[in-house]
Amino acid sequence: VWMEGPRWIWDEMADQWTRNGPIRVALKRLNNSQNISADYLNQIYKYHQCENFFGITKDHSSNYMFVMKYESKSLNSYIDEIQGMICWRDIVEMLWEIAGGIEYIHEKGLIHGNLHGGNILVGDEQDPVSNNTRLSGDFKPSVIADEEVDFLGSFAKANNIC
Image 1 (cartoon, rainbow, N blue to C red):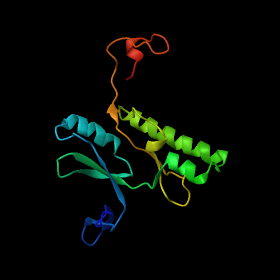
Image 2: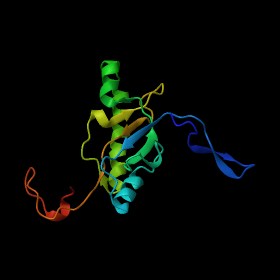
Image 3: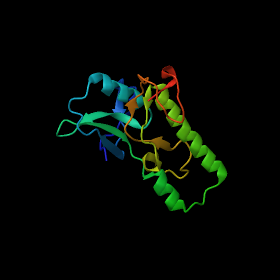
Image 4: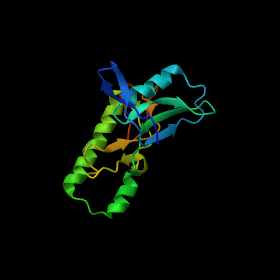
């Protein structure tokens, strides 16, 4: 729990942002990140400029950590919890949100690299599929491959995103 909470409330009398109070957060550590480049950190930060990201901090060993909104469960555990009892409308809505998250990180020039139900997060609000599905994981900058890649056939170098 982040006791002070984020600065979400504008205090007109003090002419400054004030803290909202306690909020549950998750800390995502980037292991062995003491010497990562500022450029790489900025690329990751660009992705995380969204509603569920509060900022960056460091742990006692100088590894970077992201301070993020706490989501209570993964997609896998959510499906186990509801025991498959979900209507098609909710499935389509959830898939739409997941696709939107993937599109967002691609627009930022990043790729996920390890997308699975364990790192698709679902919050604990009463309606678990309304604007509440988030992607989590290790995001990497996308790059153009230097040579042809033989994956289900040959593709030209300019079309290969790795």
